[in-house]
Length: 329
Picture 1 (cartoon, helix red, strand yellow):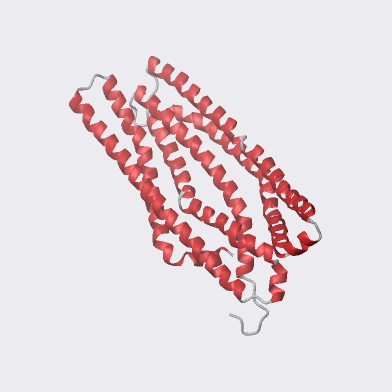
Picture 2: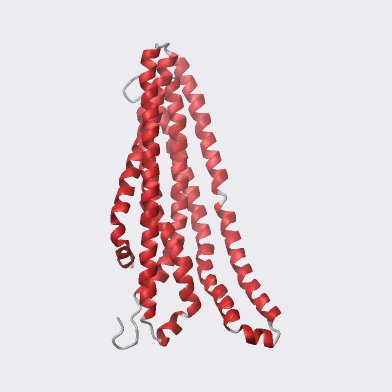
């Protein structure tokens, strides 16, 4: 199924590969910036001269600009690749539908085919963009940030052993609870489109027999059904925010309290044995926020890709359908 859809990338393979490369480079640079900032803070705290501070400051500016450029280029190439993928997918789907007989059309229904050509392809486009961009950036930043946290913060990084499983488990539970409601929505889109299509096709009959109120009630019922499922799912998804806040503030309090004690007592050291200073505490706060944000992004990716999996399955059903017309390509 996925191989059939990936064939639609075709001439947009280069933008897809460039997106992966620039996103990986951006993630690597973003993980180095807090470490450079920590050195700058420590040098200022120790009373370093301006000629020692300026190089670190210029390096930070250069890395920030490089990260911005990599992210901007990746955004441009990912948009080009995903929109091109959707264009090719829409073209192939339309070409396949043109070969269908009435028997094939009745199997899917015209309302369902409209949904697959519009909503489902839009979801497939969004999932492809997330796969080549956010789904690459989030795991890389999570891994790099965790490694750099242990390098810069030493024992302080053990706070992640508590907050990462807690947040990951909570986000996964919320996503799994929200999934059934999101999946039901796609089937109800067909019902909504069917109501519109029947009303438009039979508009003369509707007006001739004064059935406007009935058609309005029919449409409102289908629309309200979708609203209820989306509301239920969104109520579950918003639970990610308080969970994220709890973990981020727990990490902040732990790092500040324990870090302050280690600095005052002089017992804390980094990975290479250097005493922990204010710069390392600042870097740990930044890395902690990066780790938590990437876990949040992975949760969003899981939800989006799971939703899109249903859309991709529906698209693949049409692409894999063989026409009953003899000689149809």
